[in-house]
Length: 341
Image (cartoon, rainbow, N blue to C red; front, side, top):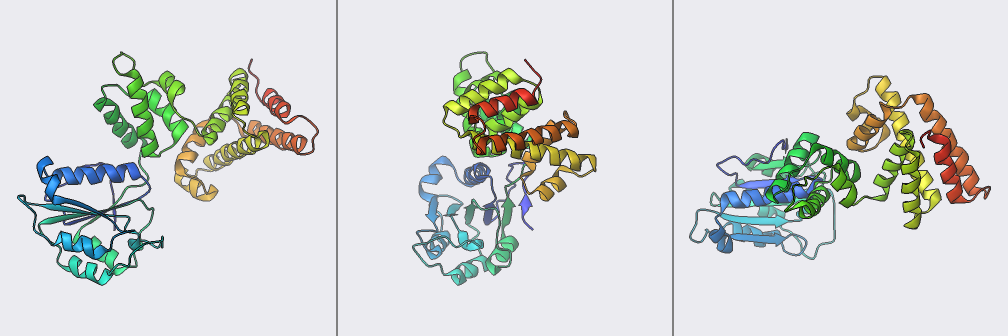
């Protein structure tokens, strides 16, 4: 069975083959670089490190390289990128792969070579003989869903390397904006770190609110949070900003309705004792979305959410029948569902 990594440490002696797969491309690339650094010195990388794209180069070329003795060093590292023949996917490729040749190599992999197969894909085809052989002879590591503490520690190290402190408040806000995509999170942390560098300013909630990129879905999540928390002024300002960005009011209301419905469903299932993982499976959304909705559901009773959902339906009808200007309808929706100033 594939190992789900809880940390990024690499144990020695190095395995002859590492298959790194999953939905976290940042972690896959990070771990690939770590293995290379463990296997080769800076000088050795120039002559003993090779990389092949399996969409454009046949696997036999990579195997021949793996069977070649290293130059002036103990190890050679061969990287096989985009090896989708290990999955059920069938992307367009420019070459044919002789997988029997690969299987022959896997029976007796070179002790002088570390082969790394980084694969940004959520699933392997475990029925394939070649996948079973890699699992037997090397290490298969899944890099997908991660705990929040792991993500926080990793991003803290990214900020620390850039000379800036990363706070938990800033982290929570960034997670609310971006979600658990490590590549996007790391890029945002770097952007915030460059802004803070040379000052005493840490990456806190204020900095994240000022600098971090937000998707439409995350802006809607924040809007819903403001409405349910009775922050009417902030909600109206955010709505105004989204309208200025040419977002369609009907689409905005649809996303608002979806988010409130998720919060409502999560609240119902929480009351029935379901875990967040169970709820994610039942609703059909990402576990992190359930976590965020769970935090909202704790602060609002179900009757309030039912009322807001009713107002969503009424506002949608008014918009689509031309009974009211679309922007005005959304503004009145915010006024009627929030109690703040």
